[in-house]
Amino acid sequence: MMIKNFHKSILLFSLFLIIKTRLFCKTQQISFTKIQSLPSCIDFLSFTEDSPKQINSFFSASKQFGNKAQIFGSSFTALCDDLGYLYSNPSAASLQKQTQAGGFLEYDLDSILFGGFGITNRAKNIPHFGYGLFGSLLTITDEKYFEVVTGLNLSYNFLSGYDFKGICAGINIKTGWQNLSFSSINNISQNDFVSFDSNSLFSVFFDFGLMTQFNLFKFFYSREPNVKIGLSLKNIGIVLDKSFAIPSNTPLPSEICFAFSCKFLKPITLCAGTSYPLNFYDFSQTCFPSISFGFDFSFKESISLSVGTEFKKNKSQFSAGFDLKFSENKININYSLDYISKEFQTHKISLSFKMLLGDNDRALTDYMVDKYYQAGLDYYAKDEWEKAIKEWEKALLLNPHFDPAILCIESAQEQIKMFKKISESLNFE
Image (cartoon, rainbow, N blue to C red; front, top):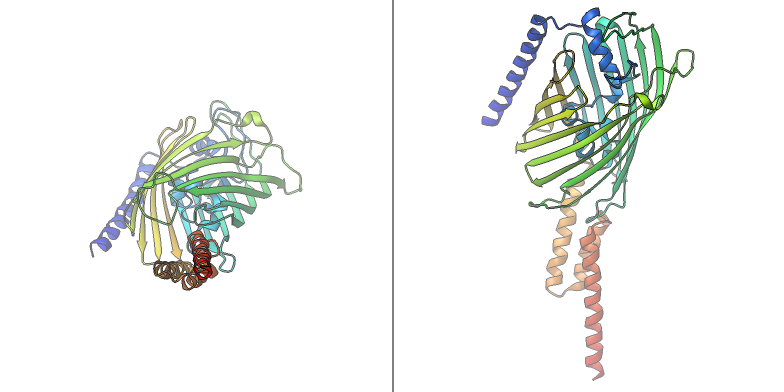
């Protein structure tokens, strides 16, 4: 009952925060009118505030998918413990424990709406293969900006075993459509002149990712490794306009990200990462890398608190959110503050939900593997090595990479050989 009341309190507080933020924006006259919005919107779509203003195409492809990924920023490239991996690191599909489906919605001031959906699964017959589908929508209603991105995710965990957890490799295959219809306005920011014509763009682009995990300074028992390292190269591809030509002034928001996460104590997860934007049209436009940090604390299995910050040149962000679990469903409520912006501080409220749809009996398989393994150890302790080997072979039928059973079978076979030699020696005498 206490947990349910706490959940209700968090939801009510979040609704209050959304209403309060909206009132604040209105009282401060922070709305996306022609004059006020475009300075922020240009920065919102550009590589860097200090370089000449240049519009990126498909900005939504550079945004984090889901609340938890938005909280941790580039450091989520290594954590990847929910649907956010679909945009952060495509290699994590082969590590997901359960089939997941969900979506998110981000509210930013009065005019920007960003949302998306995703579903991901691990193949049952190919246990180290994962895949997913996802999509996102970004609109700026006052400025008639509209953007859609859809994608297919594929991942495989190579060399996965009990001790060494393998190296995951993954790819996202994405398509995007963008419609941009801004007006030409002078003196927007620092006397820059920016001209926008009605335009539609289409793109095919890719993400690539790598991840590995291992144990290091682990002070609790768990089968799951406590350290992860992730690397991703995102948004590599081409952009075409409505005449099927490649425009020279609309680069994709390409970037390379590197991060690690660690869990030295079971309820606490720490993350750190860096992201380096890449402009393949003009490398002189590439700006400084960003650095992000994240902290996650699990009060109980059903409640966790996440706090993160990302530092960029002249523009950084602080975010915090709760992850609440109801049965097999999760709701995440997130608040973000852009607190070092040149123009003005912006507040964002976002909400995401996730449904856990089962693990294709992976937990049951692990349970049966442990059961057969323990039965084999019991037989081994009684010097019944043949029976022990049969139990361990049953475990390997369910999980061919269960190294403890492989080592035990080798040990039992050595015992059998040694016993035969001793028996033959005694019979000879």
